[in-house]
Image (cartoon, rainbow, N blue to C red; front, side, top):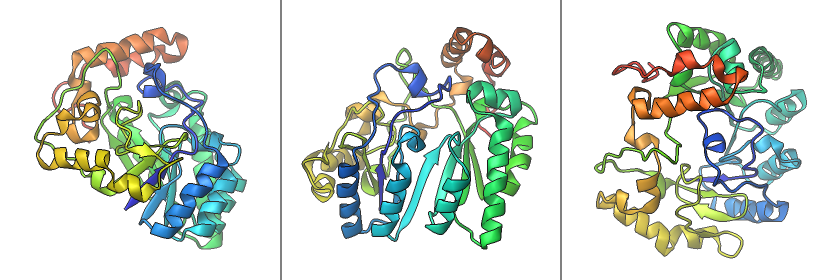
Length: 313
């Protein structure tokens, strides 16, 4: 159904809740163009419903990303998207996205004004609003629905009426706004799990890292469960291979926690209310205190919330 191709795993932001900040064991780099073209040749042959040209990092940091985008559309007519923090969005890229009919982009954004700027430094809130206003106007001028725009946010960075204010700012500029709970990426705090939950990801997608290793889940940012190596194996063989079949078998038997990836990582399937967990929130407070003046203003958001307060509704 879907293939994620990680063009770049590096990121120029250090958001205090992100694994890029709180972990020191994430492998980072950029995808070689030859590997990318080989993957796209396979995508063109097998025609999955959709591809995403990003995973763990900021894809727009890749110096050849624009070329990758053009090549992807040249050989594949399906749904193309990518996730970005928005820092490198500009008019030239918007023009390319419209002309090549890239289906949608997902922009990660948290908090209003100064809060956004503390969480997503060196991003500027007003600059993001101006960029999305420009994209909306360019789409109107070209009478294009594409690219559609989704905002992804974390409920941790909103208090009181701020989430509704956030929606009022971005609703006229985007097609969808999703705000969900914060995930636990801390090595020091094992996540909680519901063993009866079943995940559909092993039947739906493959994720190819910048260096070619293939994974079954977007939460495998540590590379705990590689399915194969796309540099030496066709994606179709990896999809049908023993590691992929094994994780599906465990899911069917409701034994996903026997898998080292599922047992180690906090993912959306468990729906953990981390903002109600004082141990998690204390780790977040420590992150904010260690960030000096830039993050000090975030401490009021980091009190442990009561039941239902941290669900993003």
